[in-house]
Length: 386
Image 1 (cartoon, one colour):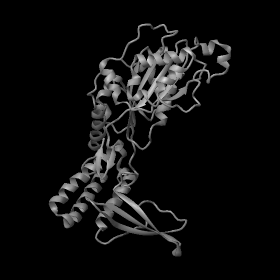
Image 2 (cartoon, rainbow, N blue to C red; image 1 turned 180 degrees about the horizontal axis):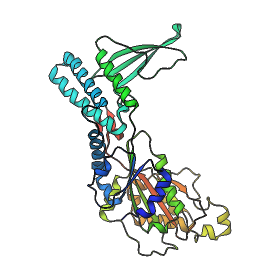
Image 3 (tube, helix red, strand yellow; image 1 turned 180 degrees about the vertical axis):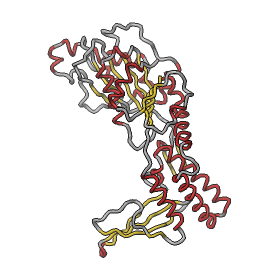
Image 4 (cartoon, rainbow, N blue to C red; image 1 turned 90 degrees about the horizontal axis):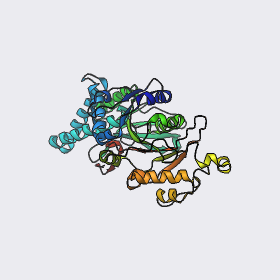
């Protein structure tokens, strides 16, 4: 059960009032709160991570497309683009093949909108168009061609000349190529609609702790959440991460700690490698009690922070001669996290705030999760590899 009373004030301090905070404790299938058009952070128990791809797709597709009526200008522009491309391709490959390609294009557009918004159709790595430059030094200008990608070939649908030192917006100063005027105008109309489009992001956080949240250092919990929230990729509409808040065995008043259930351990397999290990030693550790070690912090906490790691992190943690780090290693081993992707390629951050220091030593593991969206897949000759 998530401690909303403890977490909500911390998250409100981090994101302010402009972001909707949603705490989901009861069910994984309540998608109504996921399909709003507001930027949101959804905080859920670790068990819910099992259904993350289903949640993401429902929230992206249902939320986005239910909010746009059949008369919305953006949807109208997309229909115009599909109609224009159907007419043009019918001449080249026949109507039956053109209809198949139109359905594939519509599916691709939906995927782009879901992951990047309407503007992603016209800009970025998944864009339907691109600009190709031809330098004309003798005329002190650059000739640009606006290229639209059809099934197996590309066509120039517009040209423009830009003088050296001048700049132009994406759809400024173009001369449409004859035969592609309707397609060009449809794309230009979509661009106008996309500029006014708000980019709502949803961040899904799956949280698990082995001790009551109020027993952790308040500034430590705040740093863990704020560092991740401010570090997420700004061009993705949906992000997900798992956050494990863990305490060590030494100097802890909570001896009987809950363990990961089989379902929770299975859920952690959605987490990726390359996460962050946050270290927060308590006031009773030798690095605070020993005068020499206390003065030499943070090096005394983790002696290889400035050394490039080679091999497995578990081996390096095990080799460091402080009780706190040994406890961290033992806890990660006990939870079998080294056997998962999220236990590999961890980078380290040491929490050094002392104004609210507590006796209980703690650490956290944060790892991004695979959301199952098209934006995160690989593309090879048009085939999606997820």
